[in-house]
Image (cartoon, rainbow, N blue to C red; front, side, top):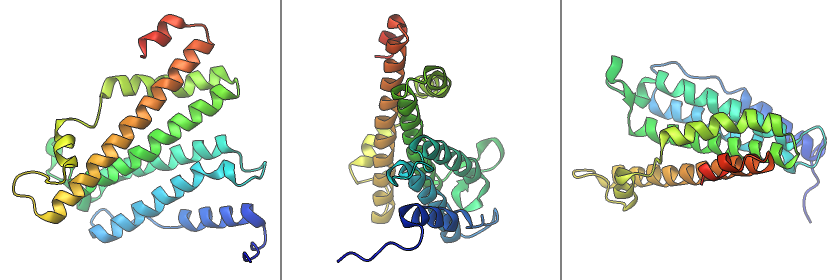
Length: 212
């Protein structure tokens, strides 16, 4: 038989898990890669946990609030990544994510984009159109500006061979990055469809068609 849930039931389990993950302190800018990866993984696990909040089955833990919290955590992670030396290369205007930084950035973007979509969809489904417009419109505009992440370089990486001269481990990591880029693009298409649905419900047919 299944073991009984601890005190507080599913709500208690969820809240303790969220509290434990929230307590992980950020490492310093010069921390080693393993330490930085561990911290980012905990933060993204927290964001992913918030995406499931509506499944707990307690009115106090609504899904919409979970999507909002997931978005906040993902934004915080994405803002912190450039500050870690282990995740960047170059200096000044030439500073950019290294391969590890790109992988973790895409992990953060994946969670963030899913949270945007789920939050916007929930607001549209709840007929909270003004709130939905405030949530979805900036996201739709950002997607339109940025274009697809899964570009020619990602298609090459997705083949598993990486770039010329890459060793097996680097090529495998680049394949993971390419898979994340494809997942983010899929979530972005979902954001656009949520924007389409919103504009259709609002009676803005021309604006809706423009998103297709």
